[in-house]
Image (cartoon, rainbow, N blue to C red; front, side, top):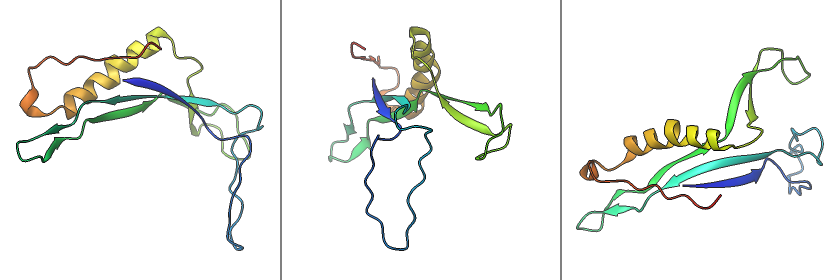
Length: 128
């Protein structure tokens, strides 16, 4: 498993548009305060049968560190109470542990090849 940070958008954006297309709408308030989102990705070694056919792709899942809450105030874009996806302010040891136990391990159990049930699974993390 590994974590990767992404910016939601870039400071400057170049578009090549057709004459009848409108400019895409930017959803950040200022280009100087662009949010970062962290994702947790889990992969494994792909498995093949004796004929070389892939039996397990190795893709476990990608999990964003976000949460959903109701909007507290009304704005021009949405009324009060609308569900809004927000970025977690920080990824602490407890948050990382919760994602590992509540999201990664159930995904591994669901997607792991049935012929390897009962064998030990080692989860390797980087030094983040």
